[in-house]
Length: 287
Image 1 (cartoon, helix red, strand yellow):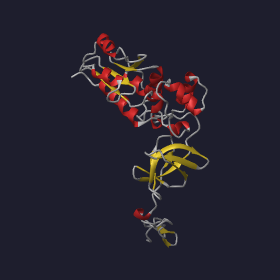
Image 2: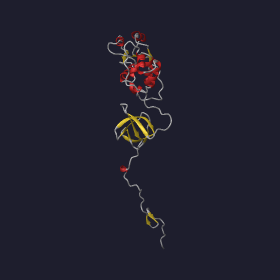
Image 3: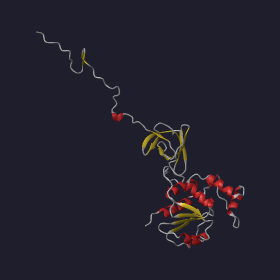
Image 4: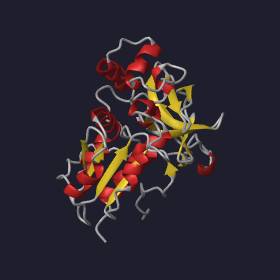
């Protein structure tokens, strides 16, 4: 008897014999394949490096296929949004225009990391005192976000002639430190002698060398070459307006000055350091 015919074929065989193996058309080894370069939105404040020039800076704006970077010296450079054209923390990335809609800043006007979701802290017992309203408005514009996060209130004194009595009335202590910012704090000045008379270990009096806080704004931010010298005996602010050809309205002049202050970069370092010092002083934990 003839054995039954089997229709089973060995694995890998077709009707007319073994099937040919099918290979992927891409035989490039994995280590030779080009890596995918991630796309990163060019959000304001993002710090990247352009490897061709070595220029490293924060994104200022992104428009029309180009991005503007600002380095730590305040210099601006514009670069095209080329694929893989930037380094982010040492890795190649492609910057792309951010999605339309409101963009939250990543830095505050003082240069600190922004905390957009943070609620204002309940005010501390400690305070920062400044001489006048213009000083207070300038500190608020640049450091306002930081002060709200820290719960620090800024008040103005309308002068420092009575500073020792004001400090005594405040009664600073370990849980209620007092910081004071004084104009024209230079050796031998009236302000210097007044500041020296404050001796509480829980009060810190610091100042800048300028006659008025107006001078702490960089002239370049206002489009002038320098702050003019005002002869002794003249009201300094009125003299400045007269020398610069501004209307002799100091209130309006200050509004114009303040409108040109956008961040700490518009202020002189002699003021920046002192305000940061006061914030640190009044927020240090007791002990």
